[in-house]
Length: 87
Image (tube, rainbow, N blue to C red; front, top):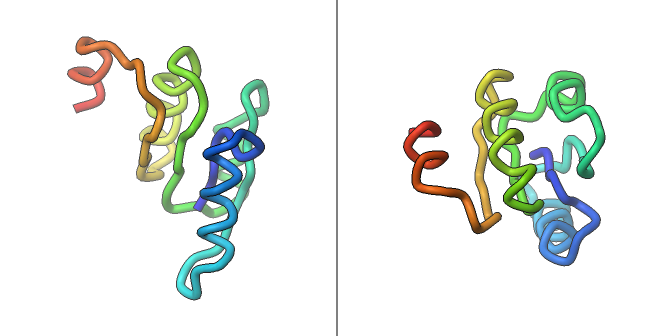
């Protein structure tokens, strides 16, 4: 599991939960401004949890999908048009 926004309040909780799970591992901890695509590809992550900000989340989702990584998003504030595009 890659965690975007890993150093934030909710992201750090995701890192802690994944680290404590016996059947998952944290493959990457990514912050806004870091190369998300490279981190996803280099880490071998199959899933990305996003707890960033709306301005970053939409691009992160698109990047994850292009990389073949399933995005799970806890970020709020995406527009209806953005949600429609993701679908």
